[in-house]
Amino acid sequence: MSRKYFGTDGIRGRANGLITPELALKVGQAAGLAFQRGDHRHRVVIGKDTRLSGYMIEYAMVAGFTSVGMDVLLVGPMPTPAVAMLTKSMRADLGVMISASHNLFEDNGIKLFGPQGFKLSDDVERQIEQLLDESLDRRRAQSASRGRARRIDGVHDRYIEFAKRTLPRDLSLDGLRVVVDCANGAAYKVVPEALWELGADVVPIGVEPDGFNINKECGSTSPEALSKKVREMRADIGIALDGDADRVILVDERGHLVDGDQLLAGIAQSWKEDGRLSRPGIVATVMSNLGLERFLQGQGLELVRTPVGDRYVLEQMLSGGYNLGGEQSGHIILSDYATTGDGFVAALQVLAVVQKLRRPVSEVCHRFDPLPQILKNVRHKGGKPLDDSDVKSAISDGEKRLNGHGRLLIRSSGTEPVIRVMGEGEDRILVEDVVDTIVLALGQAAA
Image (cartoon, rainbow, N blue to C red):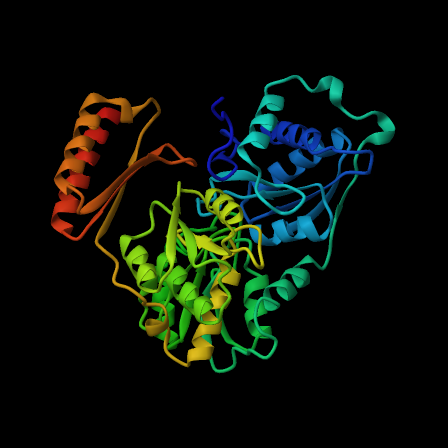
């Protein structure tokens, strides 16, 4: 059974397009029914980012959950990893994050977490999807069993303390000037305050959300403003989060970008030296650069690859006993601390290495030279362009041309109508030509 609503990271789409109040209410009812287990009073934690449509979806979901007998705890704008943490610590039966992550404000989405703070399995998502396509009129709660909703204060302090406890108690960020870009999103309050409490000289940007400007020319998907501010302020490091703060990209003191692969390499080497890796290896996706794999091999560490999506990374980490994994895009999972990607906690681990080594970020966060990697997106209006005969022929010819000296990965996005074409190899000109040929064929098929 293919999934109708859920993508690689929850349900996501245009607000008032795919993500309507009617759908949000039905998701609340379906998820609430799926997680009612036992006779106790069931509870759900709901957080959101700063999108204008968050109000609409939040209240629709409150109606859905309370109508099937679940109490709702509203925590307001909070990072996705904070909602996952709070779901577990507050002993809730379910957690919800209303966010479209790195997308612009026009989109929104619904991410669900189980009682232990983990994203849902495919089987549970299918169970919820089945309920979404059924009439639930007869499963609404009786009068005395309907749920209540209330806002919870003090949750920002809980997350700040949680994040600080991931560092040694005697470690301070004194002497570091840190520019942090919160993407006008969910972390706009908690992250600058946490960095200040740790002793850093904090320069915050992207901390004036207005409902429309989340991820707009800021954050991890548009780090140019951060690079400029780091150079302007002569800062030691720049931290760019996305709209819900589950991913991070860094900028070194020169204004150069540091992607998730370099973060994984730096943390992996440091944790190996400190004896903190639970197994001699890490988990990453098929998108991670071959240079990372070669670097880890030189350290005696294995790179285990998964399909794209941090949920698949986490599943492999749990089944294989790894405590470090992530994606090139900046989703870094540190399972000793968190149940999902946490951009801020990942950045803190890098800051800890910087303080320990007393070396500039440009050295700490450059562990390998990446192989040339070309990634291009082809937007389409539906259908199956990958089934087109000319596209299949272009892909086959490209694989033959790379002939074992590179990698080719073509996949449909799980969050938007886009096909991603990635080529990687030692010969940049060859890789670019292979990718461009496939993109041209896809464009013609999509038209």
